[in-house]
Length: 437
Image (cartoon, rainbow, N blue to C red; front, side, top):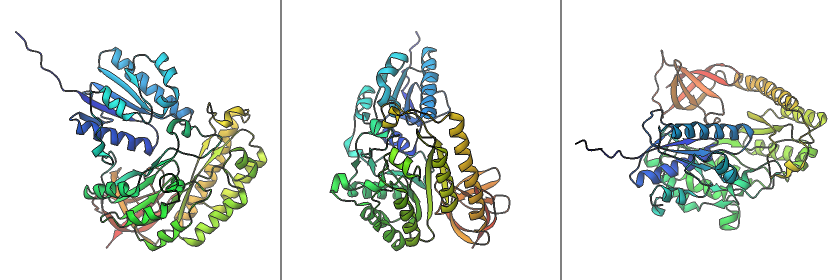
């Protein structure tokens, strides 16, 4: 008589969208591991019988990618290749009823704040003592570090508050505890993320506390770099730049999405800031920290954007010379204020405008990079690829910014370590160099 062996459940977590989603997946995986689940992140092996898709619902392209991914695993379930399929994250939060009707093969849908319910569905316990603990999916020497959840800003085009709720701070003491744990595991760089870093402290402490948080994190032994991403320009706490100048381990880097510059568009977008104040803010930041790298993101083709508005944007980008810049074409999102406006800029015009900005920025980036030739920078090395050791300076965040390439056939560096690199050549978005002792 044959005895059927009981195969242990294995969970594969698929993450779509931004780094904030990635942190959510890492926390979920930490909970599953603590409940003695065999868990993997985006495993290419076909040995997982439970799939959890953590979705993005930000803009049209991201939503489509999430839907395509769900459908792919729904087909796998129908074919008997997996036993269970669960969906969580932003898309599930925003369109749960529609998804349940249209893709019923999914065993259950969960919103962005429903991790305890998802764990319960898996017959796992939500362990409160694990708050701040997670399974890191990035290279161990850097980690995304979520300091808050949700957003209170009223931006007309943005659906994030619909999916993530109101702003909620994480207490400083909890964040310091997590930073110490990460440092003990070999993490050298913390990349601070939230829907809005600028707002940090107002919900929990009643006042802006980003500068205090930075000081406390800066004191954690083993953390060599602290980087700030996703800061809102309106009412930015300028004392942050005093801390940046005081502490060597706070990167001279700030990601501040500005979205546009014409007063017409800033008002329509409900950004709470004017063209004059935006220009003054950028000037003040650069005066306080002259060698700071400013990254921004923009939107092309928002409803009502005229040729004159776009020309203002183009001229401002040309004049301001941001060190780093990205641009999205406008996506008409349901239940946002902008959705009540006519989406009156044709898609091809949106794309032409975005392409024009990126072509301009490419030229700016080449010129700024060429100024670095002959200079030496501290570089943190992330990976080896195509015959090069690939790393970043303090002015560059993973995946979105410039990289430093050192030839692997003539030089050696250990991944996850720092090295001083003299820049020998430059292109539009890459620097080439050699290690110096």
